[in-house]
Image (cartoon, rainbow, N blue to C red; front, side):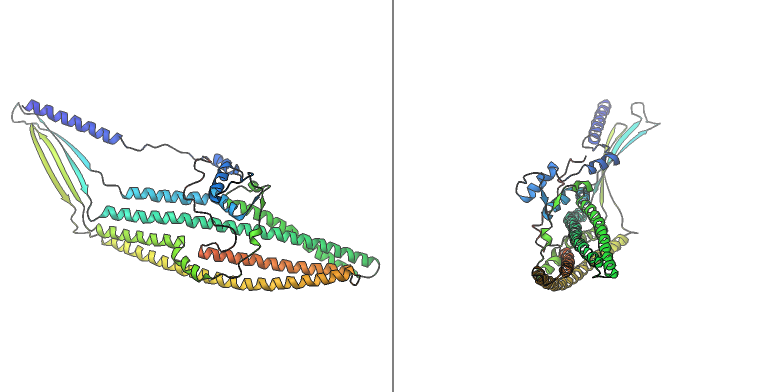
Length: 480
């Protein structure tokens, strides 16, 4: 009989051993190294262009129409925004953070594994020759979480995951905002260069007139020197403007997530910067921004996560239960046991972590209040500045209209022989100066409009529809 018991025990132990090995080997993740090669990644970045097939597919999917021919002859703000969302590394970082947060939800939902203990003893005295000198046994420790701790962990992780998802929307806007600023800067330097070239041509003609007059004694050397000095100043300004234009082009490439050479031969439409809305009623959009900006919603999710963290720490006041069933084969005798253990909250009632969680919740609430106050200040300040710059633009439009009328009058007089060439060229110069002043005011208005858009996180200018937020990486598998 004892021989049969020993055989049964051995069979059970073998079966348990096989089950243990099977449990350890199945379902386990394996590590596969993924190296980072700076040379390869740098080379992949340098190969990025605006004529990639993947970019065309991404644009056509979001614009809802075919783009033919490809690559397009010209790019507008909407198309460039989509290119930035396709290429810019900030989008990949935001998506990766969301992926981490999603994995943390899985981690939070994990249940604690049971633990197993094996025991073997050899008895020097058996009390008889028929008894086995060995005692063997095993026991399990099965933890049971109480007070809903697992649910609070999952709840906290889900709130943080939602905050990370909303951060993708916030990153999308920031990418768009940086692109708009870079494009506006390039637009301003491009048109200023044209104005300066026109002024340079006018000043060259004026200097030529003074040279002719000096030759016949109708002008002084001082007037000629002054005209040449103005000419040299304009040349220097033009040279500096061309330098700044090149820098702005490089900045635009950076805002797109592309190397500068990718913009070679690319024609960009700036028509959308020519007009601005005369009036903007910010009352409705102000409230919408305070309630629905992505960073506002993310801050709310972070606050809710701090609430869940506090609930979790409060629940930790209540100890978990550990069940400990066991079996022992003691010299031919089968012994079964059922253990039960619980931590006694005598010296530590988790007051410290609860206090920390309360403080973090208060800190999160303070950050939310500070964010709303900041948004209110940004909206009010940007709106006031925009109203004033629109008024200033109307004054500049009036000045340009006055100078245009004056130039037309002098042109007619010149055509009729009632005015000389110098008066005509000087009138052209004054008209050009008025145009430059008006253009500078327009750029300032666009800057203030962009600041107001950033404050409300809503497109207010006629730049075309704002593209949807790409939650998935459109370049998955590319540049790998």
